[in-house]
Amino acid sequence: MIALPTASEGERRWLGLPIRTLISLAWALPFLAFLAFPIASALDMGLDHPIARAFFIEVIALGFVYSASWVVNESGPANDSGKWVFLAFIFVILALQIAMFITATNTGGGGGVYMLSYVLSPIALQAPKRWVAPGIALVVALGTLELLFSPVLNFFPIISVTITTLVCVFARLMIDHDRTKEVAMVQNLALSRERERTRISADLHDILGQTLTGITVKADLAGRLLDGGRIDEARAQIDDLTEMSRTALADVRDVVAANRTLLPETEIESARAILDAAGIRLNVVHEGDPAPGTPSSLVAHVIREGCINAFRHSDAKTVTITVREDSVTVTNDGAKRQALRLGDPLHRSSDQLGRADGSGLEGLRDRVGSRGSLLWGREADLWTLELRFGGVE
Image 1 (tube, rainbow, N blue to C red):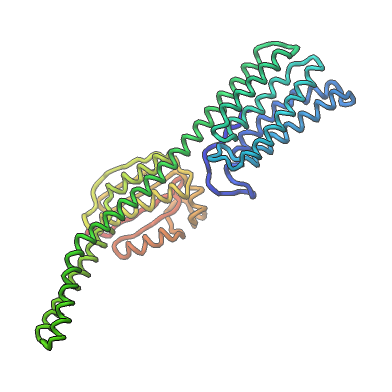
Image 2 (image 1 turned 90 degrees about the vertical axis):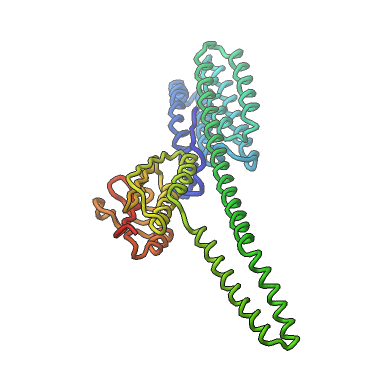
């Protein structure tokens, strides 16, 4: 019947299976309960009866192949790489459904038409995108023929199959929409990085271009003066070269320092774009502004790290950023999984913040140094990253 997987869950695995496969099974397997009705019909007829025995075997085979399709095939595939495996499963499921229809018809029943739902849901959710509409159309045509030949003509099979189709198509549209948003987010991040590289290149060219040209000219002149034996004049040019090279080095350091400086407002907007694309709500509580310079930059780094960790390592639905004059706090409600991914000594005590392992967080702690204290860990149902300054600089 209906099987509703979620969007791609990456490569995380449990019990050797990808998380997305387990989610698909969690949705698909409960609908196997509807096979209890044809199984009960076969048992009522008695398995010593050849038709009842054949019908029973067909039902069990359909349930097995249907379940296996969700393990083997990707839900909402992004390309056609697994199309032949998908086709093999669909042909087997379709053959079993037709066999069940014929067997049920021979006993005077019309329940075989209902089994088309077990064909429609894999087509809607496992087929390559361009095959979904044609596949559904073919199954609808088959269902129409089966209804015409069914000894029991009523609208209940039509209603059941139609609802299954609509729900599965809606689920597929949501999967494709989520994938489109994810791709757009990655493209936007790549474009942002490219713009930043271009800007830095332009800054270096504008700042160092003239200085390096001057160094080249003076180096050439100093060489000519040395060749002419004019030592004192050559030494003066070399002194100028030394001063110009120091100036160039200072300019490079200024450019690097400027690009290392982060602003809380900029990081909040970047985090909002990423979290919105991931379906995570961002709340911002503004209770004050950190001092400009180093404190402001450190606050921005904490916002970036806290939001990235919520996006990558948690199952958060909400992230809250609280900015004050002397501190910043980033919390998310995906505490359990994030604690397991980043390490959480607070399983022993959940009523206070503690410290955990994580290269990004450790690097951030080193960056903060003696300017303040950086704490992180689980507090009740929330995972919290907090920076407190000893004093506003």
